[in-house]
Structures are given as C-alpha cells and as structure tokens.
Length: 87
Image (cartoon, rainbow, N blue to C red):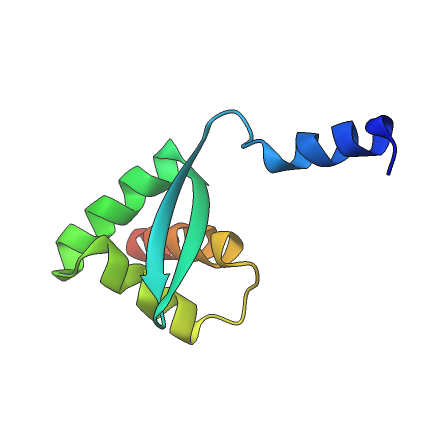
C-alpha cells in the first residue's frame, strides 16, 4: 500500500466535526455510536421522560428498528418521537 492510500484511509478514521462518540454495550458487545450533541441531548430528555436510561433506550431502538446503521435508527427515533408529540 502506498502512502497516498494510507492517508485516504486515515481520513475516514477521524471523527467528523460536531459528532460525539460514546461506547455502549449492546447485546454484550461494545458498540461505538457517534451522534451530534443535539441528538445526545434529545436522547437524554426522552429517556428521562420515559423513565429509562439512555443505554436502555438505545438498546430498545437497536432491537426494534429496521434502520441501519444504528446512528440513523437513533436519529429517526428522536425525530419521530418529537414529531408524534406535536400531533
């Protein structure tokens, strides 16, 4: 592998600006989840409202969502949660 290809690969390993990455244990395995701070804040508020921990809420999203990757499933869940509250 030449140095140019290695540089390209290194770019993908760096977190995107504005994302916060947390490590969760889902189904017994460590999983990294990167979300914007607004989504982490929303998850904390939702978890508080439904009486669950953020980890339990994400586990539930992971178990019930057809969306992939997990970050997309979580974003869609948060969006849908607040959209349904407005109806």
